[in-house]
Length: 120
Image (cartoon, rainbow, N blue to C red):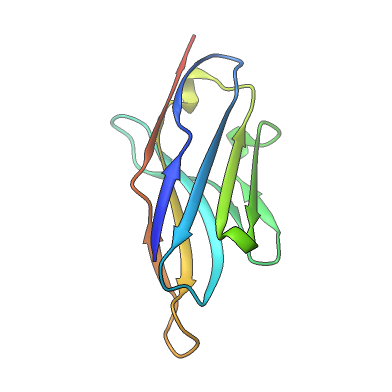
């Protein structure tokens, strides 16, 4: 399973960006899809996760501003980011827990990361 993240860029505070994460390869089922971010000098942190049934959870700091969604037919997850703040700056990574076949265990996969820069 390969994950391709896209949609990062540079915006001013208050702006919006939409990230996409497309999964490809040998996919039997994708369980969770998530977005993480890593700011310079900091550890990677979970931003939002969406489960196979559509339930989602968010880091407290992005609640009400970010929305995670998924299109199961396209094996793609999205992160709509509104009212961006400078502290949202970082490299955003998509993550998926997926099975390549019914008889294999689930594995954890990472995308390559996309840079988000928010200026004040």
